[in-house]
Image (cartoon, one colour):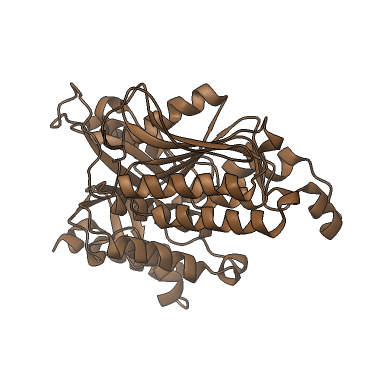
Length: 415
């Protein structure tokens, strides 16, 4: 029986000769999907990775790649086996290389159930999605090293706990209570994602008609250009059964990345969130959206982009940290995406951020706008500040009114 066939019992790939790693092809109970499952057991030498143990990871990744099955790494590891010396480091390098070769061909998931320290923590960075349990933590350099080099004292949780990785670093895609909840979250993710780059996501049965009208979505958006609202309400209104799975919810919250289904088909959603930083784009938001767009493009998941942004968040710190580079990553991700792409401009769409958020010039398949949407190089007030610097207040007000009528509307763009 081939590994890609449905199997009711796990098939052992290779048992670790030393160390804490085992691997198998596992049939997930809810979705009935086969995955290659790698387990790093913290009860065996604290999950330390010997050369042989790393070989199990490398072999499992190769099997997953060859059989086009999702790869799941469930880990709690104290790092490389210190007594294993350079052999342990070499083995880890081989494991990392094999996992990296899977990227963009099969989906890679990491479940962190305890510590993930030093080299093994970098495997998390190779994953498409990382699920962390509440009591887990991960870092490359621990509190002792931080204190030695910086003089700052921190606990494991402060440095690399779920709060740090869900809010500050963006490492955690989802945070759950325990291992059982992590399995549920994994199955939820898989329900939107195909096994490999050659397939499409599974169809999800629904009684929600595809032609259902959503008048409530229009009522959510304020009449004023500066009013705040939660764009999640619009996403839920569009989705089948108002169901959505948001990933990296607490990191870069000024942009929403989520999976939904429409007429039972998986769709990736990128949306500006006016409730946070007015929906502006900064470095984390650009990184978050770019990675999500690239993933959806790799795995044949159509993209829906909901736009309401006044532009890029201004600031010396952002410019010095590479806003141009990171904004360019989002441009690159959208520009090269070949999956079906629909863009809906909900309200504001100005300047560079207009371009970046999958504008028509970027090659989307369909671009629509709310009748009250504002599309322009910049808002009326900003334009007046530049072009009417010496004008009287009355002249500036007249300019803004004319600018709004002539340029700041979706009908000009439609023409």
